[in-house]
Length: 111
Length: 113
Image (cartoon, rainbow over the protein chains, first blue to last red):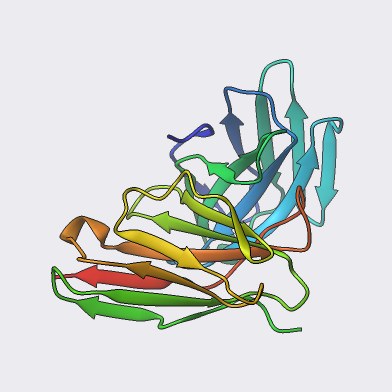
């Protein structure tokens, strides 16, 4: 079963706009990771945020984590056509090492 | 350095046949994972190796699925008596240690006719 649930399921924006997607999960976690996937193949790791962290940045990406609400958000600023992809959140629980993925948010950035 | 590699990139087989999918992790990564992804869904965990041993195989759907990692590096996922429902992209990932980023390979697209 999938623990993380992304919202929205799909997002269409113009180049230059910001894109925000959310992830909710059900159980306690050690960390939460965001991945990007193009064309249904390999996943590219974007950011890992640990349960004792609240915010992380990487280039145009900003991730927040609220463990009290069991939710995370991924913000892509100044989006580009190349950002068109599916974005997945994945949680890693304190016990065990597998990642549990959500269903993903499909982002379309129109030039 | 080289990333995670998987072979073959595509595999088409007939129902009932046996298939092997190979994963070559990043050098030095002791943890190796197999996931399966169906169209339009997120990846689902199959099995996790720490070194040569399967530390967690709770995601394997049934006893037709088996995976090995005999020397703690390359891993092979083996599927016996394939069924049409096994069609999916099989993804392999490796990480340097527990609770770190997992780096994914490009996947093997398995099609069972």
